[in-house]
Length: 411
Image (cartoon, rainbow, N blue to C red):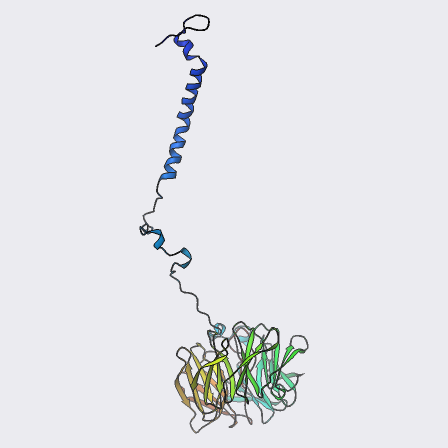
């Protein structure tokens, strides 16, 4: 060891060297490094080490990153849920407390000004009473709190009590040929065929008139709503036109010509197209409501008139009023897959299903008869005599969250 002299001339001893300022600083630095270095090492290891893959996970993808699809388009194992306009109608079970009300079929007899009430278990008429002049259809209220008989010639609705099945009052509105309710339940729609007009009314507050919309083609008859309820398509029987009406703005929004004599209207289960019976062309028009054009025509039979969606929503029943038959259209293929005939002839008009979908009911417009079909075989299981010109019968109570009116259209 080299011994250097101090400032006072004395030689520096090893102890003095160890106590010098420079040496103390050096050893302090070494001490700090010794303490900190383990943390530095750990941090370095954590920072540079590859991620650990658990044994039960998939192996790491070794393909170049640029070949991998972005995360938001990676395939998933679950398909997108299917949309069905009639999802609430699939159960086949009447919701309670309506389930406690006896099921009945209410039949308006347009030529007689009466209503017949049928017990669907016995196929017998169990009640009969007078209403207004020319009753066309019996519409359940949106909330199923009442039934309304639209008496066109009397400019009135006969209110039926759902518990007793009997008249309980009368409402005055002009010439109701048909009565509907918007899907959100806020408005009633009085279809006034005689005036080529539809009236939007506040049915919850005295049936106050909200707005009248002119339909500039003769024969405004039947309608159905879009899936979101923002518009409806309405047939104009004597002009070959199907019109589009904006529900929110309450104004005409367009039209499409289908020719012939368009009658009943029904939205497809997927909500993309409308089916329109055409009595003049003897079949059903498939209408695209966005492009506003007929995209297909399905021949069914003479006098194609009423429509009813099957309980499983796979089929569409079509009444061919002028030849006494029912055609069954498959929604998937848009073709007729079956045809049921009424032995001896008949005039099936408006249609209804029982809750479980095994019985299809049809009014017989020109035969004063109600027909009941077994939907599993297509055979007629009952013919029930009723009043003259039986028309828009309704089966009540029935399956669905709410009613859109007409003769019992549920969603």
